[in-house]
Image (cartoon, rainbow, N blue to C red):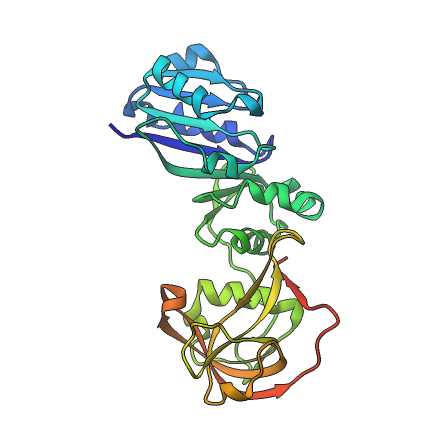
Length: 313
């Protein structure tokens, strides 16, 4: 029998406990059968054991990271015999340790949810980006709560998507209602004959084009790029792109779009160019589906920029 596991991650006071309470106690999850609730830290709200009992839930604490082991989880499985498991993960523990853990037989991670406090997220991004992004990189859903009118939702969204492309992102206002307006004004004019993408705007353009490639269908763009010739890519195709810092200095990756060009042999690998290209939406194996494909219109040699990295913030 499969036992669904729901993982809740995020920094302390980001709203994990509140989300669990809303889901388990105020929602209808208790109808799924006996629940094992594993808490790995003291949350912003305390769970009442009598209240948990009413929804057929047993609570267990694992406060030390060294105690959060496969053996301990198997012990809890035998003792509690749950039909579903909720885990409130500690915001300072390595998420990769859990993702690589050998779970008890039958346990299946069906959903990973992460919470973010909008009022502190920018500070964490500036001062401890790697630690906070570690809590988000594997989440299926990221809930950014306590949003206000001035919350930089676009900046937060790009930071998260840079390390977790598959994540669905929801914005929750301070009153608990969902803010469905996550549109961001782009820093460039889509109606220009040629859209000039600056180094500062490259990350915004890259993420926006990935999320909504049809918006750029037939648009002409111009940007500074580093040439990359992947070994397995067909003749007449290369990738103009940039190295981007997605999380920290130890997490730098090359980001760019597939580009079709008749003169790829004249475009030297790892050379700097200013490229003007038309964007189209096409199926590409590299994207495992449809995505932005560039058609080179003009390529000019260029000087290496002072800062070779681009950023998603």
